[in-house]
Image (cartoon, rainbow, N blue to C red; front, side, top):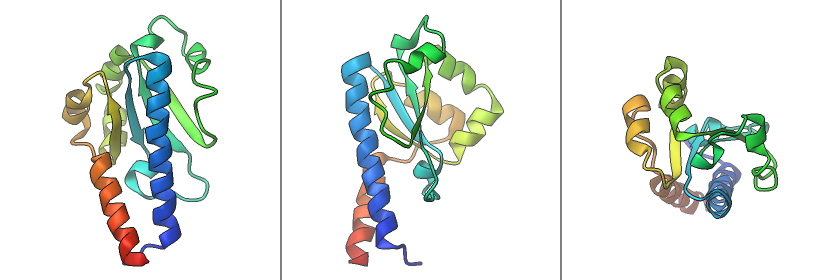
Length: 145
């Protein structure tokens, strides 16, 4: 199956933007675990797809859910949808079948300063590697040139 060059280029652009976001989040919040999930993690995104990320940080402890967006508003690029969580909330969420099922369909750990990958792996299966995905997309792009 031939993948349109523009689609591969868009996927790589989004993955780079997610990596840049991880750096900005670390600078503002300190240690974070950033998880890309949804259509951009699975590869079935379309023109109207949001870039779905879970941002896990101890900095959210004690903040109301809506107040957690305040430090994120100027960091999130247009088209990004974030779910800010504490590590404890992520642990509780992963006890629920709906969360496990959603992540089992595809997720990528972009940053894991909080060492939550083993927890995610136990709950939803192994994540796709960001490095491996980018490498395979670049190889695909080279083959579509």
